[in-house]
Image (cartoon, rainbow, N blue to C red; front, top):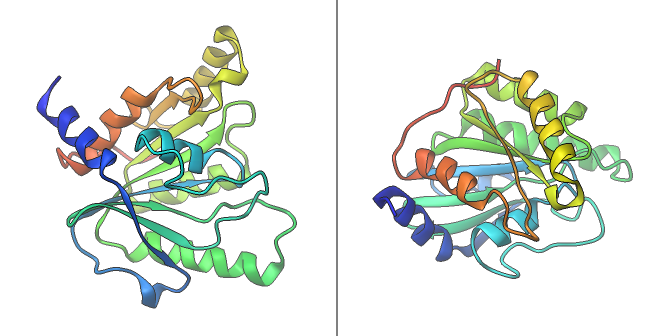
Length: 210
């Protein structure tokens, strides 16, 4: 096992809840390196975080979409963090709360110097919805490194998985990472660890979406 892979696995396995941020004034100091994980409500963000960090309940999962209403920071060590962004695209959330979420997310993504990369989580059966495309395009315009994860891959057969993967790859810049993932089976964990290592351990930056 290469040194960078060992390092990222060690970091992820020592993840612990740090703080839930409702307003930008509550953000931890803007230092070190962190990766943000975004996605539509019920796309599988919490399950992905739990599987990636080898913890059953580090991030709270729920059958009710739209539960995450803050920026949730997980400490890996003093210099590295994961950030779970509020889910977007849930119709039952009121307009004021939607505007608050958008303002909180946008302000964080625009100004956070420690942010080393953005992971967008999408259900493999429903990829690149409007909010996903909007966020990916915005990340590209800022020059923020981007990695797309198609979750719940175990819900499809291998042929349908690969078809969805190819369709998404055709619609984004060739340098943007796109992969399949299943929190249930563990499919894609190694690939996601490698992307995290590039950003958090090795410090390399991928090209943004086009």
